[in-house]
Amino acid sequence: MKQFTGKYAVITGGGSGISRETGLVLAERGAKGLVLADLNFDNAKAAADEIATITGCRCLPFALDVSKPADIEALIAFAVERFGTVHILVNGAGICPYISMEDVTAEVWDKTLNINLRGSYLCAREVFPYMKAQQYGKIINVASVAARIGGIASGINYVASKGGVVSTTYALAKLGMPHHINVNGVAPGVIATPLTASNDYAPGTIVGQPRDVANVIAFLASDDSKHIQGCTLDVNGGLYMN
Ligand SMILES: NC(=O)c1ccc[n+]([C@@H]2O[C@H](COP(=O)([O-])OP(=O)(O)OC[C@H]3O[C@@H](n4cnc5c(N)ncnc54)[C@H](O)[C@@H]3O)[C@@H](O)[C@H]2O)c1
Image 1 (cartoon, protein in one colour):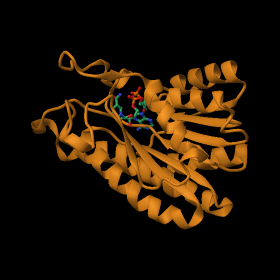
Image 2: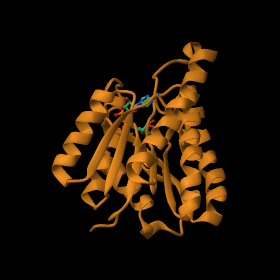
Image 3: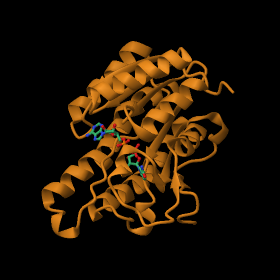
């Protein structure tokens, strides 16, 4: 199934977890080039090298802090310089602090929203002109079940950031619609990644694997979903049903 033949993708958070697995899925299905961008460059490079070895896809690591607008400009400029354009953007970079309300200070709130929400928006903003020019694009935002149910163990700052991601997805979809740019999202439940490793979930909590989410992101990045706009798909094994 080579759905992504000739396609170039940028994936933030690509050094780990859900985003790394998404890179592998896109490459397995024929993507021509990937930029895996992450705060942790060593992880991004390891992921890029491994995916390139497995699939033959051209995979490039990039050091990025999504809370820094200049880094985002540099990321998309890098991708366009190497690949000529970007067809697919996956906004996967994120943090999930497990903290009590008392510890959610103004600084903590701002940091979380700048990474999880503003970072996703600015990445979309930066690729929009290229997608508009080619009248084609797929943007997938990674939200969370926390946005649906007020969080499981995460702080209120995380819940707010992911709620913002869901509503920003609607707004970006409206802006993308006239230009054949699909903007959608996924809302994962508890997924076994380094992000969740430090938290003790209640016995019996349904836990998914990165591939469970990566497959759905790939669907939203493919033309099989071209009539879906502004939708955040729940990928949680039944933890929350809408
Ligand atoms: N794992 C879960 O249970 C779960 C559930 C719901 C939503 N999510 C969301 O999925 C996304 C991926 O999470 P994951 O579980 O794969 O976690 P992960 O920790 O494995 O991956 C997140 C990646 O984002 C990177 N990152 C963090 N801050 C960054 C920054 N400022 N700039 C650039 N990169 C940064 C990290 O270095 C890491 O590689 C996140 O947005 C997370 O909120 C995860």
